[in-house]
Amino acid sequence: MKLFSFRGGIHPLERKERTRDLPIEVMPMPKRLYVPLQQHIGEPAVAIVSAGEKVRRGQLLGGSAGKVSAPVHSPADGVVVEVTEFASPHPAALPVTTAVIDVDDEQTPWQAPGEDPFTLSGEELARRIREAGIVGMGGATFPSAVKLDQARRHNVDTLIINGGECEPYLTCDDRLMQERGQQMLIGIELMLRCLEASRAVIVVEDNKEAALANLRRLCTNPERIRTVSVPTRYPQGSQKQMMQSVLGREVPAGAHGVELGAIMHNVATAFAVYEALVLGKPLVSRIVTVGGGAVARPANLEVPFGTLVSELLAHCDAAADGDGFGYERLLMGGPMMGQWLPHPEVPIIKGSSGIIALSEEETRVTLPQPCIRCTRCVSVCPSGLLPLELAKRIRKDDFEAAAELGLSDCIACGSCAYVCPSKIPLVQFFHYGKGQLQARRVQSRKLERTAELASAKETRMEAIEREKAEAAAKRKAEQAAKKAAEAAAAATEE
Ligand code: SF4
Ligand code: SF4
Image (cartoon, rainbow, N blue to C red; front, side):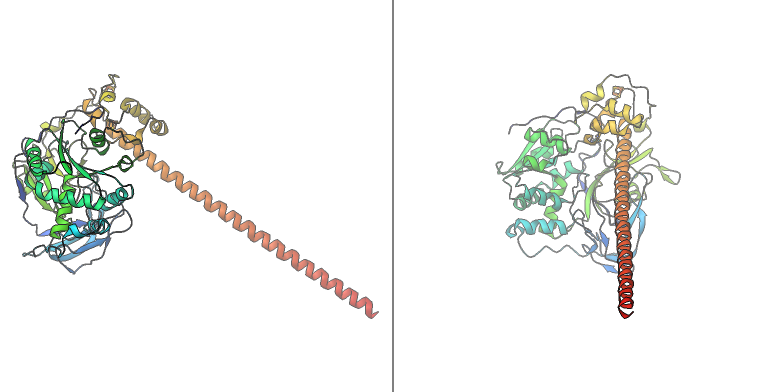
């Protein structure tokens, strides 16, 4: 199969050597789970359980709240202690509605559905994927069924399965491809059936030799499902870059991959489809890489959602420091596109591919220096942007000019900041600029709405005044007519 390449990109230090050979280990079930109802992009799920209620493993805790939403299920048998606001894995640990569950000592096994999923229609498969709460597990957490429905409407013919895992430290997808490749392929076949698409291409970076070898051995019909190796280069795993690598076509700004006849899902999403449709297990757990220099015993752990990050760190012997853990910085996901966590008392959710506790040595901070216009940032930007010019405009609060330079096309991959010799925190500028533009758009929509309401009120008031004036004129005319009639009658009598 002919492969292509994408522009820009970098080769950051991989730092995968400590976990890539560690088999998936099942994390012991915690005594208490904190399951947020917002674990995906879109509307949060709506709680349908309350304090004191007994729940079964796989039971719905929160239902979908709209077209772009996903249900949330209980990862364990237990009792709901409360449904309350609890810190989420966000840089500010923003509180979100969370079901707190005290877990039973014994857990009931999963019950496979009676029928063969390969006898179900594409529509029915999409419905079951939606009901299982499956979202993009590469970090995007977009509800998978919404993406599949879009692709079904566009008649896509190629399903791209993303096994790139180009973020440093992370090896959870690598281990999944090595250990659960057969189940993943069943998930891919079911997705192909759902899409009525003709082929799937599993794309794996060439630094994952064991995963590539395993999948190539398992893919016995390469016309239907093919495994391809692509050169290791960050951000290979981003949707637009991977589509370019596989199809040789650039997804235009503002467009979707489905418009080019292809759709991309992560390897872990394909495995989740297998678990839901074959084993009857909705999305309630995932594989998480726990690593970083502050972790003594790194691991690839299968973790139920709602487990606190602090429990993962304790399980992996993260260095202790007084009352807390001895890391310098903690992040969820990889260091390039992951989120910094202010503390570890937040739960693992559907998009948590990694928990990385960085040591002081790994986070040596260098103060930013002035831009020397070396243009290294330009040459590595996979979106073809001018990061130095974008940052210059954002620094001057000229957000509209940054928007004109394509700020919305920035995928926040961090390649520019990684190569910048002046250590300018470019991605922080871009997050800030996007936030300001979004806030201005919201503000301008509010102002437009207020102006619309004011204009509607003015029109209503004018109509009322007009009606009043017409009624007064009518009354006056009636009175005049009455007086004239009375005067005429009096004249007749005389
Ligand atoms: S890489 Fe850094 S120093 Fe070089 S042009 Fe870009 S922003 Fe300036
Ligand atoms: S963070 Fe944005 S501007 Fe910087 S390299 Fe990535 S896409 Fe380009």
